[in-house]
Image (cartoon, rainbow, N blue to C red):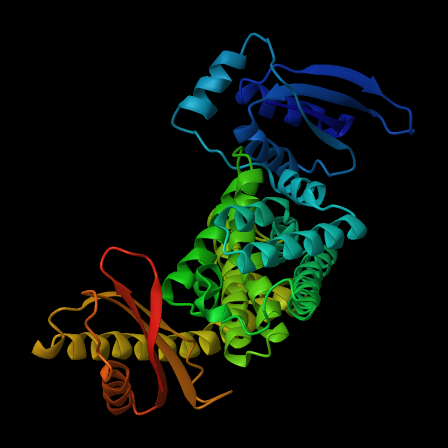
Length: 437
């Protein structure tokens, strides 16, 4: 529920009151001449869903934004309020979206001070780094809860669709610089952990499940970013609480940024590259999905007229939006090519491993897992590591299995592959590396 207070000049009073009466609104009028302007301050309660419709109608008759206040109220008791609630909340004109001016204010109110924003970003990256190295999903989730990236992402997208240049500048710069700060702090922390001996420097970070999930992005990673951006936009543009949506946006960004820092600290280029691709894909997906949802909900730049897009296109109006959309599309396209190459390689590896294990010689083996290091298509290295985990009967050696799988994968993929086979005997969980070549 909202309470609207609007200054109505005397010349427009009759038209404005007709609009309010037509909408069945109960209003109070107060004479207002404090600034030498002859008019009235008109106040009326209204369902949140009707704010944009009523304000648009008042703007159409010439009432400017010189003095319009929209405030939240818990409840209202007026003669027509139940009819309005039935119409806009439960009836045929039900719509959860909020007014254009209100969404701008909500986005700005979400944004903390720069010191707070970057401090929380660094803290969330440190927690995420610890969670990844400890292989603890609970700690990684904790890092997402304190991450403030939702404010920057939504402020940037709202600014883009409303053509508010300061919001665009502040939102997108905060998002970009925040991710750089997250990667840098994760790198510094991981480097300190590695060389202080808290974690053995020889540990294979690609074998840590929480790290592995962020360094081998697939098509589903794109879905996560798109859903996070869309959910954030819906949450901000409607009466739905946006706090939980912020966790979703952090899911798509912070753990991957921490994985980049870990890869750099361990001098593992493919780990850093794979995680960075995930960060880039998710950031671009969040922005594009948010823009699409806001546009679908009817939010447009100030002065936008109904009709074809061509009638509203101008360099000043759509410049920032076009630049961001094009850059995001380029990032998604480039990252999509890399992801597509990796997914195809991963599918070939899985097929190759299964074809080897289907041989009668390996009937006693059961495939448990195949871990494929991010394949960069030769950008960083021409060699890719593959780890195959299999269950085997106790005391049954398979000394040539790793070599056989490696040869098969190299023939199938046309790339140099290093294969490690880990055997799990019987019902135990003790893993023994049987081959590495």
